[in-house]
Length: 227
Ligand SMILES: O=C(O)[C@@H](CO)OP(=O)(O)O
Image (spheres, helix red, strand yellow):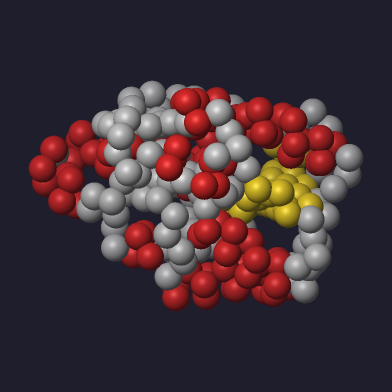
């Protein structure tokens, strides 16, 4: 079974070094170019997708569209879920990462960014940035939407989507692409590769680079490489 993961290309807020999370920013010009280059490379290397999965955030949706357009595969069925969203960065969303490190210390910011189970400061209930005010989440039970997530919580909400939707597609022999985010993909990589809570701190997934997993029938990773 072959699975391709792709982190969206550089976003406007990656460029500005801002905590992004569920904030719906689009790709930067460089991000658009990265996504196109990824699609071109996938096509050159003979990849051909049967089904695609992405989040409900524009930067990942846009990346997937650009990849599929380059591959001349815009017809491929695309399924979107909030479960593949970036981890919710709570009240840190919109703050500059460097300025936050100056204010709270680099160690604290590193813990917020990379620890497995420390939550970021949460959004207040009535904060206008709460997802319950966003139309795209209205079909969900809005009381269960996060106000801030660590990687552990992110993995717990990614996993049911993996088990119920993505893994069965792979089992059915489909070639699958997932266009998502730094931390939702780190969560999935942790699960697939059995990475420990400590070691996951060091895993960085670059923007716009297709990451290929070859899996056996029991989802054991046989091979992993970047294109
Ligand atoms: O800001 C974010 O949402 C993420 C991804 O860009 O940042 P981090 O590198 O801290 O996981």
